[in-house]
Image 1 (tube, rainbow, N blue to C red):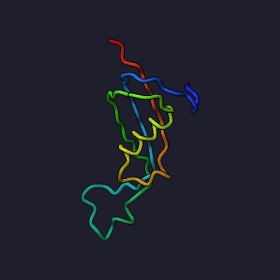
Image 2 (cartoon, one colour):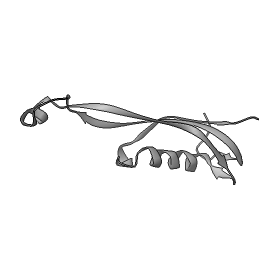
Image 3 (cartoon, rainbow, N blue to C red):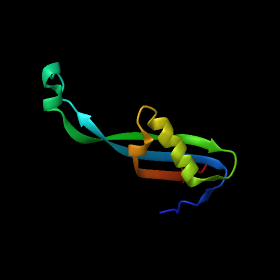
Image 4 (cartoon, rainbow, N blue to C red):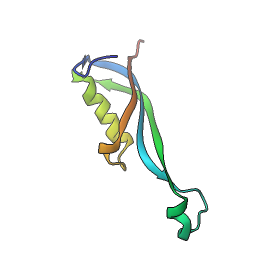
Amino acid sequence: MPSSTDIVEPGRYDFDLKVEFPSVYIPEHTPPAFRLADSYPTTRFRYASGQFDLTEHVERDAIRDHFVREACKDVDLAIVTVARFELTPVTA
């Protein structure tokens, strides 16, 4: 696993991100009066992947954090855990 201080060289990269965060699940069609009683804690996951071009040297953690912020715009980042972040150079 790369260390948190790795510097990523300019180039084209594939990325694959999986994050998780605690949440509360309320079963579908639960009447409003029973929502609190029927809810239970769970863990939610979000995934993001794609390709991007990097034009300057950047720390790997900065790239990861950027994609986490993009994937979790509506979630408090203090509760988000990165489960997987893979960065792979694209070879032509």
